[in-house]
Image 1: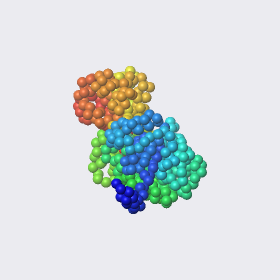
Image 2: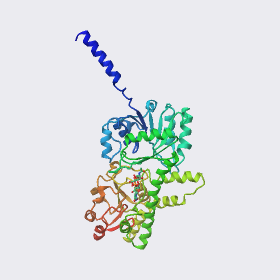
Image 3: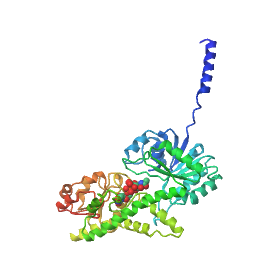
Length: 449
Ligand code: SAJ
C-alpha cells in the first residue's frame, strides 16, 4: 500500500478513535465471603459484566471455585454458574484496592450460649478497611441486628482506614435473602431492601443492585431500618413455627391431627399463613437471627419475652421427638437403651447439604447419650452416614426416625419398612404417608400427628 494511502488510513483511524466513546472501565467488585450468600452473588456480578473477585479464608474453596467447581452441594443452578468461572477467588484482600464496590457476605452465627458472634464481621471489616480507597462503596449483606452498621462496622472502617464514612467512603446494608434449594426464588429475582448511611451511598447502592437484579429494589430510610427488616422477616418465621410446634404438643394430648387442622386452616384465602411442626428448626437464619435482636434490644433495656419463648419452644423439639420415640418403645415394652435405631437425614432442611443448627444432630446426640445403637443415612452426607443407602439401613434397625424431609425419603413406602421388620417410625418432618404406615400396623408417630 503506497504512503499516501497509509497516511489517509492513519488519519481515518485517528478520527474514528476520536468519535468512539471511551471504553467504560469495567467496574470492579470484591465479595468477602463466598458461601451460600456470596457465591451466587459473585457469579451474578461476573455474569452481569463486573470484574469480580471473591475472598474466602478457605484455600480449598478457592481452588474448587477457580476450577469451576461449586463447593455447595445440592444446587444445580449454582453448579452451572460456578462452572462458567464468572469470578476469581482468593484468600487475600489484594483486590479490595482496585474495587469500586466491596460486599460483605460472611456468616453471622451465634455461640453455644446463643450470643451473637460478630467475629467474622469484625475480621472482614478490619481487613477491608486496611485496603480500602476513597470513593469506594461498602455493602453489608450478612444478616445483622439494628445498630451493627453504626456501632461496629463504621467505627472499624474509620479506625483502620483513616477515612470517613459518608464523606470519603460509603456504607449500605442490603440484607441477603438467599433461600438455599429454592427452585423459584434466586439471587436474581428476589426483591431486596437497601438502606445506607448517606443519601449518596444509598443512590450508589440502589444503582448497583438495579444493574444485577430483576427483582424490585426497595429503598429504606436508614441502615437500622434495613437491618431490622431482615431480622423481623426471620423472627416472623421462627415465632410462627413455634406456634405450630406448641400446638403439636397440645394436640398430642387432645388426640387431634394438627397437620389436617393446618391444611384445613389454610383453605382460608387471607390472614393465615401455614407453617408446620417438625423435629426442630435449623439453618443459619431462622434459629439464629432472633437472638441478634433479643441481645441488642436487651442492651437497651427491652426484654423480648415472646421471641425468647418461641426460641425455647423450637429448641425443645429435638428432645420432644426423642420423647415420642421413648413413648412408642415403652408401649412395646422396650426402651431406647440398646434399641437399633435408624436416623434418616442430617441436613437442617430438605435437599441441601447443610448441617448448621440442624435438629438431626441434636437428636443423634440424645440417642447416643441414651444408649441407642444408631445407624445414620443422609444422601447429602455420605461421609457422616454409617449406612451407604436406605435399604442397607433398614436391614440393620428396628426403629426409624426421619429428621430431614429429603425427596428420597418422601417416597419411602410402608411396605419397605414392613419387609424389614421395622416396628416404629417417628416422622420428624411429617413427610411420609401416615395412613399407609398405620394401616400396615407399624407404630407411626409424626410431630403433631
Ligand atoms: N421449618 C419448620 N416448619 C416450617 C418451616 C420450616 O419446622 O413450617 C424448619 C425447617 O425444617 C428448617 C428450619 O425451620 O429446619 C428453617 O427452614 P426454612 O425453610 O426457613 O429454611 P432457611 O433456613 O433456608 O430459611 C430461608 C430464609 N431465607 C433467608 O433468610 C434469606 C427464610 O427467610 C425463608 O423464609 C426460608 O428460607 C424459606 O421460606 O424457605
